[in-house]
Image 1 (cartoon, rainbow, N blue to C red):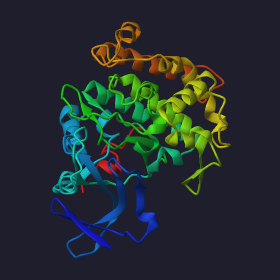
Image 2: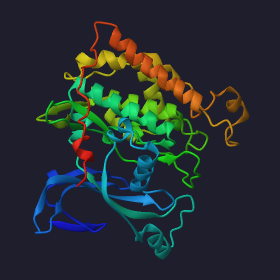
Image 3: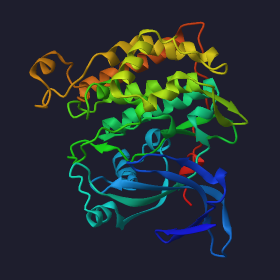
Image 4: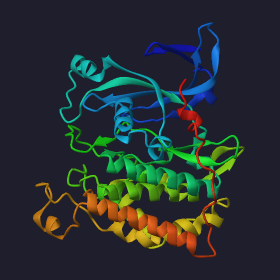
Amino acid sequence: MTRIEVEGKKFVFDTANPEALLHKSVAIRGRNTTVWEGQLVLENDEFSSEKYAIKFSWKEKTRKSEAEILRLITERAKGRRDILDYLPLVVASHVFSDVETGAIRAYMNVLEPKRAPRELVVTVTTKLKGRITELEPDDVWHVWWDCFKCHYKLWKLGIQHRDISTANIMYWEDAATGAKYGVLIDFDLAAIEGEGSNNQQRTGTRPFLAMDFLRDDDGASVLHAYKHDVEAFCWVAVYVATCCESVDNKRQLTSNPPMLTWAYLDNWTLLVKKAAFLYDPNSFKRTEKHEPGWSRWEYILRKIGPDFKQPTYDVNNDLVPPLLRANAQAPTSTPTSSEQLHQNMIHIYNSYAESGPRYAPRVRAEVPHDGPPHRRPM
């Protein structure tokens, strides 16, 4: 068993137990995030019954930590439960600023001026039930919309998530009713509106990356807009419907679904694949479990998918050729356009629910008055 102390709290996790490894990203560069299931060490040296998610990641030194961003959200939300109930609760966090890649680069004489050095961060949150990929179709629908609505409210508060993926849409379950509620996690790559950034790389998880970011080599000509996160949400729905089955509440990927290859394609090939899918959303076979509920997502894709294929450039960026700037859409990060896009999505949601034969949203009980269990104090 491995022990670690974070902000005066001691936690333990078992690196020898494969089931304790909740998440592991594999990449040559990036945050190299690893998440373990752990427990709090009590005063009598026993372990708590409550489980925690202990995340190790390497953030760029120029970025705020996830804990800092979540604290800022708490300040701006001013107790709004329609936001806070759908976010993770950080119980401890520490930035190990003395463990950073800049010193390693300097020692090895490896200089990368476009990339800020990274430092190790440990963030402990209360453990959630699971990912959206594990859920039944109706629950996927509810959890997806929970996170979608929360994401927009955060955007209005000036917090831009910018890394929507299947790994970052999770849920908790009400023990009394069995209802599932979405939780939007992983704010490591979030941006704060109005604050400058030294980051020169696009953010996002490749299979869910908006098509705009695939049209050039480094994404420098594209202003990250609300539209791009909406598109990422839609790719999440496609991934769940075409790639995921579940057995005993554990994710199981189907054999050879086309979208699994998207993480390894070059930009142009991936762009063509995405455009072709939006032309015919039925071109990918759905899993047996998700086929009955697919019409909901197809309806959304056919309504707003054409907007994703229309390029959006940063018209104030000199790197964008004048002809492209003249013909590009206005950036959708403005308050008016982001609000309009969100209202269009809500209108689609409502019109879908009201037309039949459809899968109308199931009536769920309100979140318990004392809040969801993952946000209750230790």
